[in-house]
Length: 284
Image 1 (cartoon, one colour):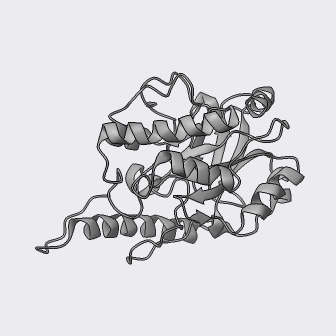
Image 2 (cartoon, rainbow, N blue to C red):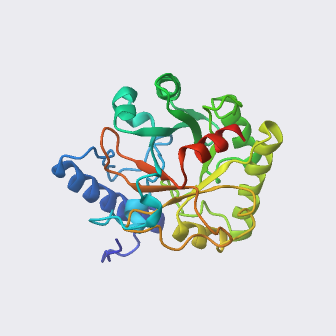
């Protein structure tokens, strides 16, 4: 939510972080007052490394959810899911299962140094109650190569097994919460970085990773590149009444993160298919 600050010589990078933090804090306050589970409100100090989570930048850059959702992919036969990270601690998976959540993703890693301390409870807990689970990696493309981060992800929970209950890993590509939105990379450099991660993941697992992103970020930071659409399923992030325009090349989305203030945990998602297609994605 852009605003002007009449102060000269204010560092651009610090201003950008503060502006995003104010927007996120205001939104978190709104959700908190409404009684819905809210994501943690960031302070105006620099965001600590490791605290990023899926959809962190969506509220600040794309806005909050609409009062009603009318997209046809939200019809009753589509499968509800959630995504969680360390700030949510131990998750009540039994409650989520009872509330018809049938798939889930847990943040496993970030960059090449952070691992989620609650990963075991979150990842295995979902599995134990019958939820089809997967792991995601929050990319920090300015800290190490895509190949190195794929290896780190795979070494700390991001693998895949053909057991019918494990989804392929997801690569979270969104706004940098620690600095420049595109991690200081040109569009071509960003495409190369993403490609390196995806190629490494596929070479080691035999599966194509899912790409999580928002159309606005993808356009800004990759130039709306279409080259991954033929191989990698799309998990779109948009808190609005409809999915809206997808990144170039993708004719449909596989998953949609549609709200950050859902029941039991904040982020809720919808799989764009029936249960048999969800199981097919898990089985490869």
